[in-house]
Length: 450
Ligand code: ADP
Figure (cartoon, protein in one colour):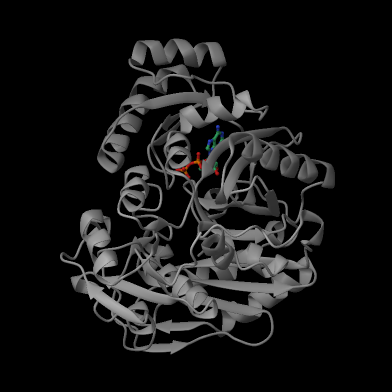
């Protein structure tokens, strides 16, 4: 296969910059795109070339015919979709192929399969992955749903089959609430994903969210890059991610690695991906979903392994073999990532925008900052509120927590509220320091924080 010479980055913000950096280090060209409100985006300046796309909303970055035509005009041989937007759109991946452009990601059929949470549970179950009891088909009526829920036993969770980002999900503790929750799950799914298929599965009380980063080439070599603990969530959305998990016993850890890599091998997966699991208090393991893209939290894995996930993803797409064996991947120390959001934790996390008037960034040993903001930058209100990620690393968990305290204290952004003060409280909380947290931790602690 031919080497990739120029990549169009079909994304914006910190991930666009991250991909440009990977391209520069690989000495390949980078082409940025930007919507009408993103003219001042830092990725626009850092790429070798840039092209405007019409519109100012999310739609601009979803207009794939236009994006492919820009890629052709700019002579790009590949497109990196980043995360969100077109990253898990199988039609887009196919359209790239049809136009002779390499889609930097998995095969369209895998994007399609894993885009449907229900179908992916069925497929994973077939290759020996433990899944939660639940429906294999969309639940068409409230009556049918209630019947299934009774059989499974409450509490259950109703989930949008094509959902994501914690949306279209409702926990039902008792039968009397089923109708209301079913309606709100289907309505939310329709609103955000344009389809209303939902399924039901057993709700696990207070689990940990542990996910395995996998990396696979086109020749059947499937490796893992360890786990990430993403249990610190607000309303089912990740806020802090940690690698490795500070309180996972080694047997469970190894079992998760084994299950994830075996399944990806059997399904013929290629590129990078993340197999997400819930682990309950008794260390039972349940697959919940597979993400067929690079994830927001990939830097913690890069930090503890030294593997540049985006660079390797590009090489896999151009047909390279993985250059290392599983035994050669070494895990060193602990990394913690804090998602920095332009939102006000004291006002129900209302997203806030504005211009960065003063900006002091943390630095020093063991600190990485992936962000697209700078002094004078006006954060547009049109997109996600995440404006960057702070990643810290130390040899021990205790050291990483101390590093996090120090780095968060150094971080100063003036112009709009951010969730940095909340992160400062979390890293001082005893349960966080002791590693005794699960997915309910933050929603519970919000009552005492700030
Ligand atoms: P999304 O794609 O919207 O992120 P996921 O299926 O990955 O949805 O789940 C997100 C989070 O929701 C999980 O990390 C967990 O906290 C919670 N969750 C999902 N399914 C269950 C379940 N069956 N039991 C308990 N919590 C769940």
